[in-house]
Image 1 (tube, helix red, strand yellow):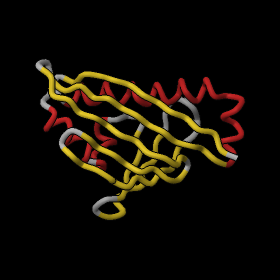
Image 2 (image 1 turned 30 degrees about the vertical axis):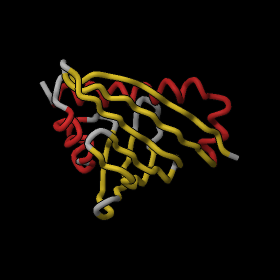
Image 3 (image 1 turned 90 degrees about the horizontal axis):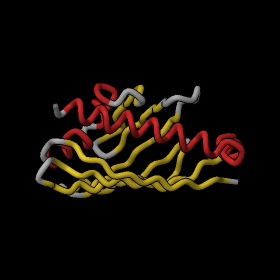
Image 4 (image 1 turned 135 degrees about the vertical axis):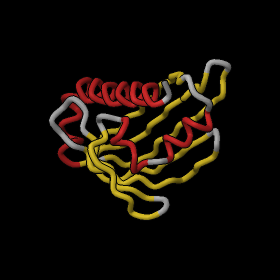
Length: 142
């Protein structure tokens, strides 16, 4: 039994796309600027274990595998507490970089069972996670 989620968002960061790209591919330094990423361990050149905790008292344990690191498109396969994919599309604009985010994941086990009851709460928690990401990226580039 699993529950599926799709998240999308678009934000602008006042920095050139090359600088934003550099920060997004440097997973080991996510805890420096993204408050909800509590730990990252490198598992090799394309893989990392990431622990995330947003507003709810639950820490997600994820393994990320880099699929694409193009200048305008980053794609990551996700496994662990979530299974699926995450992508960032970076578009250079006059005022900086537009980031288009998409995440398609499924949750299994206890988290899946809970998600049917508390889906709005889990969506809100994800929104807090991404707000921390965008605020951190903006602080990093000011």
